[in-house]
View 1 (cartoon, rainbow, N blue to C red):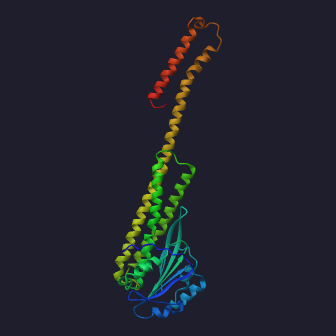
View 2: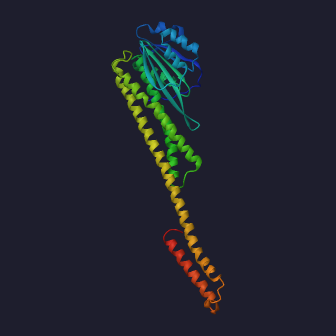
View 3: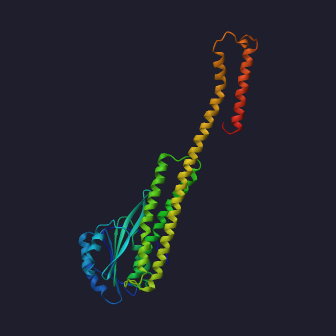
Length: 334
């Protein structure tokens, strides 16, 4: 399907949009109290968008479409796992949204009520405005005319597609870490950042993966709210989720490799330092040994009385030290 361009006007709370459509074209912006009447008219679709609604607003919407109390409770108090429930003739769907804010993946929730002639979206927390979805598909009335199940597809597809910009930003950071890690060990703050990225990726995976089951249910024959013609579109959303999942798994593997590589680089540098210390210790041991021997003040040490004993001893020490230095240098220890 066509890519929806992100348009993010300044968010407000309450009712973001409340419109009625006929044959894919917006015919009126309506009050909440008129929504049920318009939804009952053949061929009409009411599309309501809410942002951080209070209980009173949710009860007004509930009264129009006879929504289940449990679904309203979930919509009022977010933190539900992505899921799909059927309450009478209405579907209730929960999806997680994600945005990268100050370097951390931050999650929001979208609750969707879908029934004959209406769809209601309720947003909580960080998410890209669905005004982009509305504006895009209003320019394609032949698609919007397919009904409320097409609007459901459009919103779910938009949510899943918006996981990718988050992953792309994380991927850029992961590549930077990967480039640095082979040059020097990571600092404590870099290791902490790596751990946070791995945890955020796991949380994003847990947010996206349950939507596979949601889309599977939406393509089953036991949901009268979803027309069979829409099944391929929801399978396409499933494919997008699988792509997101593969991307997440790939990035987590790269981060695991980066951590292991950093440990290996650190161990290699520690080994190199140990070799240098051992080499210099061996070289310095030579004059130390000579000094120890000739510092014992034995009376019967003939070489002490030799005319050239002192320079000979210095030459021998220098020769041994030079040989050891050459040998260690050749072996790459120095």
